[in-house]
Image (cartoon, rainbow, N blue to C red; front, side, top):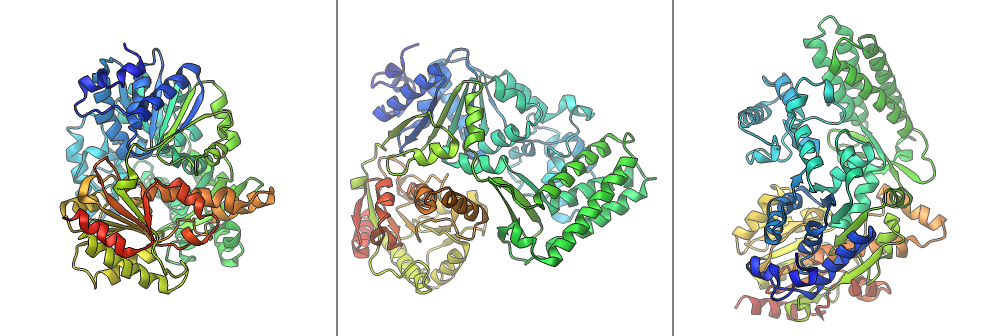
Length: 639
């Protein structure tokens, strides 16, 4: 096999075998650095600007590594599938490699035959839509080979039938299940154990790493190389999984599972239904004590309310009674024994999360329309993750288009405890100076002022008209999004595609299909969205994406950093906002032929001392403060 340099060379193997492949020096540099990290069992952090071709840059050395088991973890399931079904097979064929590859998703993506059989005729709790979705799953179940629910294209990603036909760590019977030998999840994990390269996603990696989930826990220790693509997401995802949580929904699901057993296989155990009903009622009442609109806050604030603490005590008492009742019937039914273990875990977790927070962690809560969730989150994962990286010694690769702040990687490496990591910053090959224009409009109100919303509407109107649609309008809050969308609809005739009106995929498809459409979105559209070509010529961002000061985790981290002598605003809040802004800005130019305008409606980019940190982190675009110049630029693209 030729060397990395020859493979990526102008007359090399990839040029010969991949139609349209164009050699890029930055891509070769990254591939060489990855190859070096694999050989040395070292840690590498790479920022690869948009267009570098980072996917091929890590896949080639991964496929060339002899006798190495590789895990590639991606940011989302969509990227995971793209990598497994398109990029990895293409590169494997180009290199003539015979390495075995496998795709492994979280258990919630696989059909559970036991639960499908259990609910095959529906339940009294299912509505018409759930019963229709159940029928669809049952039809598909007779033909599927993988059991991957994603194969059912007509089923919504958030279909309420999914909890009835998939398992969780809590309700899986494991080897005690009569369907264990035919379990789709077990088969997927068996394939992963045999594969040379396994494609997972960050949530699966950290969930199973933290929970020591059966099966995947055997995969990580056996791996020699771990590659994180879209690695900028890793610190927050890892923090979630290194913490703990318990929700009223979990308690309700636990109770309903127990009640189902009492009504079918243990009909002489009516007391189980009684304690289950009591736990459901008290859990529901706890949620009803909080406002209907979703919110987040510190658990200490929640527990200062007498009615909350009193109701929480009732939930604890109901859960204690539930545990005692199930204990009486242990050994009579395997699933009941599993429910008992779940109940003990929830009981212990609820007790810990109801106590005052210990140093180094924060206790917080959030509500959705149907549940209350109590969380415990570590303020730093650096020490814990450093231990994971250190032993056993192997290769760790972290890459993304947005890891550096300015040209430095300290923010990321300190968050992750990667003190000894090698770092590499590779600029995008795109000609931003000629392809893109950055505008911070003049005469903007301060971001917090009420008049700013009207100004955003005015700017949006001018951009939509100049670009004839083909705009992304990105916002840092749902409230601003809704307000601007409503007012914009009265002033333009273009089709407005508003986040929340349909699925993300459907919105993107509709945007590409209608050459004059305008898409309005929040965080979901700041990253992981690829619209190359002239379908997208303008991106507007309402303001610098600082995290909400009311966010309970942010509050706790800010307090912790300041107490330790740091300056949280400069050490944490600005770097986090810089990376988020780079992600949003990255939607604009996706290939060498793209042209467009980025408009950031925040005068802090010119008035504050820290503005240079943001500007130095953005691609080197031509700059203007004049919206008329922006309109002229966009008009030239429409000729």
